[in-house]
Every structure is written in structure tokens, then in C-alpha cells.
Image (cartoon, rainbow, N blue to C red; front, side, top):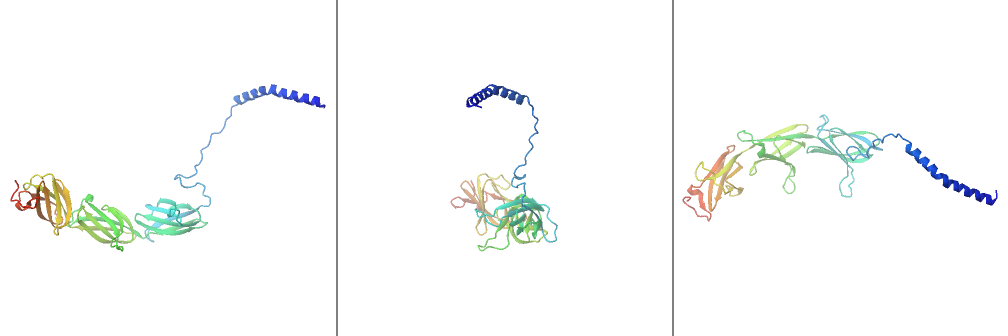
Amino acid sequence: MSERKYSLFIRRAIFALLVFAPFHAAAQDKVDTDLKLTLPGISGYAPATGDRGDRPLALGNLKQVTLSAQLTAESPELTQGVIWRVFRPEPGDDGKLPLVADEQGGTRVIALEPGSYLVHAAFGRAGATKRITVGNDEQRENFILEAGGLKLDAVLANGMPIPPSKLKFSIYEAAEGSDGDRALIVPNVSPNSIVRLNAGVYHVVSTYGVVNAVIRSDIRVEAGKLTEATVEHKAAQLTLKLVRASGGEAIADTSWSVLTESGDVVRESVGPFASMVLAEGNYAVVAKNRDRIYQKDFEVKAGQNRDVEVITSEDAADIRSDGSERAAVE
């Protein structure tokens, strides 16, 4: 083919493409528009983590470790109430041990990478820590907590119960520290509640009211047993009133101070009444109303709840605010 004929052929081919291409595209568009495709729906996908949001679904090289706990070697496995925490033994940048996993309940199965870990089992205030090494096979780790329970209550000297709302306990370590104080383990324990503790001796402080009715005692907790202890308070509930005559109405706007025999102030309040629990013993009460000060000595006997009236007409009880005595109140 000559060069002239070849050039003419090329020009005709280009012309044909320009003329017929739009018709081909339109036909193709019509085919695509009329064609109906049936595609399967998009299936749901699995999130990258499990229900708790911190566990990968793909276990990879993770190995199953079964954790169980007993109160004593002879006790059955605990089925609830245990808090499991697994840490890496090397501190992180913040100086704390990184938490790898935590679980609650009884016997639990945790997936861990091979390596060394610190596992802590907490049962109430009782607990135990163990270093474990996870290998290439599944394994089981059992914890003997050597723990028991402590249930506390208190009564008055005559055996009468004390209202739970006025009673609380605090549990301390039995041994004193270098500063002479004991470490507080559990504060504000309600009566008849069960506190789980490691076996041992504990210093228990029982407080009736908020003033000075306090009983201290050392109590031993035995592993695998519930220790129930009841202390006896030698105290009474008193209500102080400033009145013009015995059995009269309490005078408002009265400030109160209660002192021990040695003169130490144990309670101060303001109002027509002053209600409080005091330990057995002798006291003095000072009532101030306007520019008058009245004083009275009284005795608290264990279990004898009563009202103490300070009568303004008593000569010995009426003292001016400047300290001078009056024979009677005008």
C-alpha cells in the first residue's frame, strides 16, 4: 500500500469512529439502564473487639488459663464474689503495673499470651497474689485465700439492742505502726453485715452515737469460718432541755456544752434540745440562753436513756454571763 492510500485509510477510520461511537454509547447506556441486577445483601460484620470492647476476637497465640479460688485447701471453689485482675510484672511509663485483664465471679477462664504475669484474687477485703508463667499449653491456677468472714453487732449493758442507725464499726490492723497508729482496713461497717477478711487478728472499734461511747476489742478471724462478735456498750441516750419549771417547754435559742468531770468538752450544740449518746460516767452541762448561763451536774448510767432538765429557777444553776451568781431569774 502506497503512503497516500495508507493516509487515506487512516482518515476514513477516524471518521467512522467519530460518527458511530455516540450511537454505540447510547445503545450501551440503554442496555445498562434496562438491565436489572439481583445482588445478595451485605452481611453483618464482626467488630474488632468482643462484647467488653477490650478483647480481640482472633486469639492468635493466646492460651487459656483457668483461675479458681478457695477459702481454705479443704473448702470448695468459690462460685461468686471473686475479682480477678491480671497484670504484667513490669511497670509502665506511669510507674504502675499494666492491667491485662479483669474478671468477676467464681472460676474464670482468661486468654493470655505466653509470658509472665501477676494475678490478684480479691474476695471482699481478703486477697492473694501469685506470679504465674503462661506456656504453650492450657493451664489451671488455684488460689488458697486463707480467708473468713466477720459479722459485728453491739448491745447495751442490759442486753437491749442498739438502733443500727446509731452504730458503726471500723476495722484496723491489730499491730501498731511506727507512729503508734493502726492502719485502717474497713471504715463505717454497718452492724450485722459480713466483711470478708484474711485470717488473723483485727482491732475493732465500735462507736455508738458520735460522742464518746466507744468500745475497742481485738477479734480473731479464722479461715473458712464466719466469726460473729457482739460488744457491749455502757452508755445511754440523753436529751438535754432548758426549762423554766420541771416538765415545762424547752427554751429555744440555747447553746449547750457538755463537760467531763475533768472539765474536757465532749459535745457542743445549739437548739432547744441537745440529744446525744454518752458513755457511762459523771458530767456537767452548761446551758446559755441570752445573757444567762445555767449549769447542772448529772450522771449517765448504762442503758438508762432519759431527759436531763436544766431548770432556770434553780438558784445554783443561774449564773450571769459575767460570772456573777443570781438568786433567781427575773
